[in-house]
Length: 229
Image 1 (tube, helix red, strand yellow):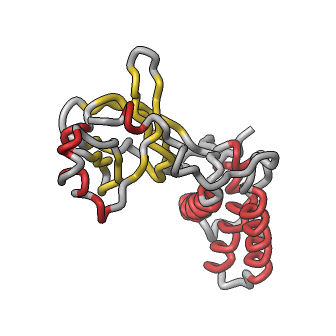
Image 2 (tube, rainbow, N blue to C red; image 1 turned 60 degrees about the vertical axis):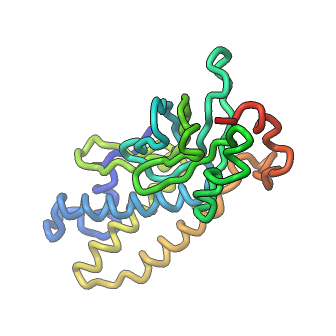
């Protein structure tokens, strides 16, 4: 079961020994909790283990750009639907910015097109070659964390079921004690310990098979067949 904002506030007040104190209001405490929540979210996202990864589909009917989803945070991958009948998708590569015009010059355009590639530009995805970007796509991405506002709002279950939500509690308690000008050294030490634990344990969720270097030579055997504009 996910931890609620009310539970986080209660635990933070207990940690800071301010259960019956009005020195820090619930509104202010909620700000501290959200700051801790966002920091914890970043720690877990940085493990690259897809705790929050989701997907969406989109179509480019004309042009070569599309807006990123609302709440987009980190990109995990872009797929192109190579065959609408079977629904088969193939992964696309990101192009280096230095190569942004390469596909618009000979010999690429003279040979009938080139493989689709993408790049994040501002709040959009930009595809090259520009005249061969139409089609159906699937986007894999990490969304931003949703700010907690109401007492019943919850953090993602993946942050609470392992006890990692204690990081948020310690973060908020530290801010409360700092405002009171009390000693925060013990709380800081504890937060550092749990941060180290999270960084260690969030990684390598699949302990049987870990991520390996992508085969850039033979990993995309269908490139010339499917990806031409």
